[in-house]
Amino acid sequence: MHITRRTLMVSLAIAGLAWTFGTVASAFTSFTVPVGANPGASAIIPQTNELIVVNGEADASVIDSVTNAVSTVPAGLNPAFVVVNPVTGYAYISNSNSNTVTVFYGYGEGKKRKVVSVGAGPLRMAINPNTNRTYVANCCNDTVTVIDGDTISTVNIPVGNRPIGIAVNPVTNRVYVANDWSNDVTVINGFTNQAIATIPVGEAPYSVAVNPLTNKVYVAVQGSGFYYAPGNVTVIDGATHETVKIPTGLQPVSLAINTATNKIYVAGGQSNGDVTVIDGATGETAHVAIPYGQWGFAALGSVAINEVTNKIYLTDSMSTNLVVIDGNTNEVSLRLVPLYSSFVTVNPVNNRVYVSNSNDATVTVIQE
Image 1 (tube, rainbow, N blue to C red):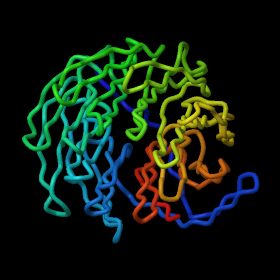
Image 2: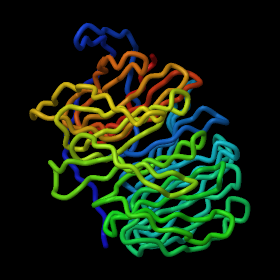
Image 3: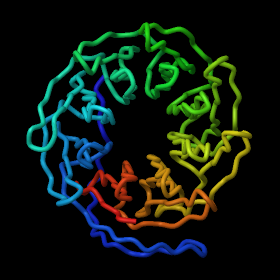
């Protein structure tokens, strides 16, 4: 299967502005950094405070947080995702059309590269920093590849049909894989590299996140239909594998957990302008209204959380807004970014927010 990205060529000028939504106004500064074509997923390298962002043309850009200088590192065909081990600083890029993962290690100009063969169609990845293992969901041959960070050796584990979401509980050393076409989650024992359970969760599970403090797993389940299907989050008890379903907005595609507040934020891909906030302690929900985009709806995608400031950031590819939710009040403010923003990453150390702008080959840097 050949995996492609949607390409809509739009280029917009951007400036740092204070936007008001409702009664909320927020001051910030922002600027853009040119990177490669069609930038997408990104991650922070904590040892250097660099941002690494994958580009659509077989490479990645590395942005220095002090000078904002950009260096380019080679990757494989159609790099899809990037994760960084916070302990070792190793960066892993999944190359969806070359069936490889590119591993970068070392810092600055001394970065070294190794290419690792994995399964077909590698997309999302997750890391257990305690064991130095990286887990790669291979959507096109129904496997997860385990990369040992010490030896760069691999093991392939069979899972369900079209694995697309993946998350790790580093405390229990369990890996959770959302299988989009078999409507279930595979549980992998990280000690043995064996699948130990298959948990039905509903139609079209897409994303998964783990709260290691509560041992709860949250799965965004899109439901039947296409853009306007009612969705839910299936909550899995990591100890018993029992499940509870919590209704959300339309077509939930991504979710993120603030472990400090035990709140889960769920974004819908083609939504009616709504973010579902789940209280992890009670299961109760709140709904945060999001302003519509230029086409009369909100297409929320990537979610990132700054647990230090308790702010939640969401991309909306159908507007020129980066949505910001105050986790204390659920009030919303906006940051101006180019149309078709695709990914957001937060660096809590310097309180910077990085937004990948997929169609004008830039990253917007927002200093809160």
